[in-house]
Length: 44
Image (cartoon, rainbow, N blue to C red):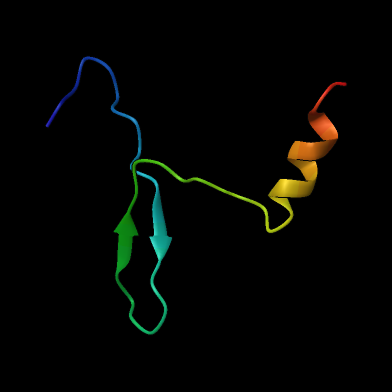
């Protein structure tokens, strides 16, 4: 198929134990020390 504008590639992640990949729309990363960083960012 011809596109007027090339569509964006779909981001995917590997799945442990199989060769297929999983398509993702959003990736959220939360650190294990999030609470400590939140306290650091507070102003008195």
